[in-house]
Length: 510
Ligand SMILES: Cc1cc2nc3c(=O)[nH]c(=O)nc-3n(C[C@H](O)[C@H](O)[C@H](O)COP(=O)(O)OP(=O)(O)OC[C@H]3O[C@@H](n4cnc5c(N)ncnc54)[C@H](O)[C@@H]3O)c2cc1C
Image (cartoon, rainbow, N blue to C red; front, top):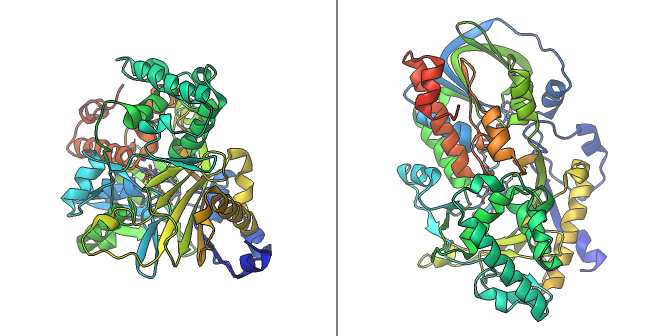
């Protein structure tokens, strides 16, 4: 693409830099860029929370049975499960959905985050209960490497990879050896070892593939990946299962978030406050005080119980009374910065597969936004929207602070994509960049078996939800499972169970 063509391209940069501690607004204002649109966030308040600022706590204005903090899929589903009770749901952003939000171009939805789910999961059941009908993806993931498109990478594709015969053999040996480990009954033993330890025995191209796959799916390259998590992924791609169990909806998992919000709004619109940043959650003897910032003012409400559906790095800074051990566990999660870049084409450029892996490029994979719609009778594609998943190293989080940094990454993504295959050379008519500073926890060694159980133990009146309470990866079904457990705990406590009895009944591990 020529420089003059690039100047004409419309870049739109939106999104929160974190569900927590994002952008310095003065940095954004200083940027000189072609008509960017920046979605403002309540990051000033979050920065102050992070930096230990003490907020005034106004008198209690209202009392509830339960307050739910955070309106991602986790908080929304907790509110849905507890909808028969006297609840209040509070969310920092002006919109619901957290990491599961979508945008639209000329009426065509596309993901800015969470894309697919698996059949039979808690979130799939919830979607169907709400009247949604997730559509099977039914397409094993291809890889594009060295100028070649290879179908079904970890199936028949291993014989087609454009590498030397010895490298192809190394891929096959890795698959065979790792599937033996993946079928071992005691998977927890593999949680403490980084995947890179196993990868040492294979060709560097195998490591490159996993260093592409991991960051997109669970935030981590192989040095930081729990082997247990990678084995589970490999089993899905190359195990005995005959069918692709992935499903999705037009717009991805955001459709579930939207549906949850709409369903709650029918009867409980006055129990849902968006644009409310919680600054403290203070457990007392008989209730919990929750202070939040909304419309330039602080407010305090009280609740018998609180469900914290925020990520742990935020939760640990808001909830008082956490033990040192629990605080340490919550703060040992690491989160991957992430750009999701949507390229909108007014002609077909790529429609061959749902999710395609591209080792050696700035991005990890590219998803065809309307893939499942294409199987629907009578559907006609208007624009070809491609979603590029572009996680960034934690070391480079600061690049996301500036619009020019995001644009630069988007330009590199486009450049790399156009070089992959000759048919990818057309320019998009618009590029939309969605940035998030800390959206996805890394499935690092020990996170699932050691950190999560220590981080997610309920207090007497506060229970912890969010996808980082269940894991082992950041997944919508884990967010829904965490909320189901938190709702069960809350109902037991409301019905008079002791903390220990409620913990046991809800299925907390210790
Ligand atoms: C790029 C990307 C792609 C993904 N792809 C998939 C996928 O294909 N399939 C899948 O299953 N999962 C995927 N995931 C993971 C999935 O999106 C998450 O696991 C899930 O959305 C988490 O939901 P949650 O409610 O637990 O957390 P979040 O979505 O993080 O929600 C937390 C909410 O709390 C709010 N909040 C934070 N601080 C405060 C505060 N102080 N006061 C009030 N509110 C606050 C935030 O604004 C946010 O709305 C993806 C994630 C990303 C980032």
